[in-house]
Length: 363
Ligand SMILES: Nc1nc2c(ncn2[C@@H]2O[C@H](COP(=O)(O)OP(=O)(O)OP(=O)(O)O)[C@@H](O)[C@H]2O)c(=O)[nH]1
Ligand SMILES: [Zn+2]
Image 1: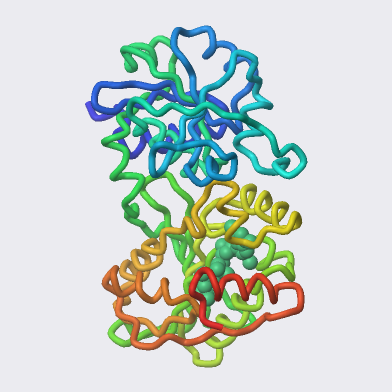
Image 2 (image 1 turned 135 degrees about the vertical axis):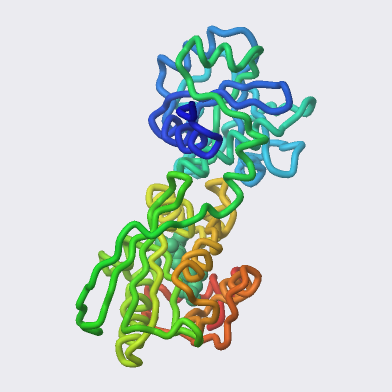
């Protein structure tokens, strides 16, 4: 019988559980922790977790700890001791920087120095993968698998899950169909589905680009606000339309529409970042205050899809040298970087300047 879910399927299940506010059990080298995402944890489950023996902690990223002036004692994760009186709102106020400026004094916060922070790191990795705030309530427990079975919770070994979470999942084409567009009537849309239960990604193929020559290509990261709503805060919409228009003019090209909204933090977190930007922080600082890195995208998804389509060389439309480097590292040759400078306006001037100064984008 092979009905039992494997580690890839279990990590997808864990992500879904955390998004719904259901705790999961993580194990690592014989130690176990009950883990719940701070963003979605409800009061009843918090009370239930508190009724168990042991000292629950809030795992936050070292970046978030820095903002909260709490010592992390670990390069990636801090474990904040939770006072008896802590409510869900208290946990969320530590996880979410929205009210930091209004209520700057959250501490002094006590953090754990002793012991192993690796389960805390794993808990944060799962919250990020679930596109939630990177903060988790964590309680070390004995006999994790038995506890999980008793309460019907998902349990998985974090050590086995790590490679799954950090490797790009194989992408399989689900379907493709003809799609005439204003830029070209010879359009075709391909849908790719990863094997790890993650987001689907799309490939827009214009014309019939030969597989043995460099193809005009764009790796476009989803931006609901820019692509669909015409937001003036970024340049994504004009870049999307500009890239497609050039492919239409040349009669051939591939645009990958990668569902990595908000540089991989998800739309809800991106809107949290926008709200912080309205408080005066730039795009990079806002990500850091939320506990994220500047850019949480996995660009290898793009190279994986291009290779699946049969392309090994690209003329890449981008202003981001990191995309070029990643494509080369992933075995797709970039024969030319094609600049894509469209959509500058007075409202995104500062955003584009920050990307040039801090993220290495070429102006
Ligand atoms: N977290 C966050 N994401 C943003 C913000 N503004 C735009 N994005 C996202 O950034 C992604 C686009 O990335 P960009 O940095 O503009 O461009 P790039 O893809 O790195 O480089 P180019 O190829 O030159 O466009 C999209 O996923 C947007 O949703 C922001 O202020 N914060
Ligand atoms: Zn955008």
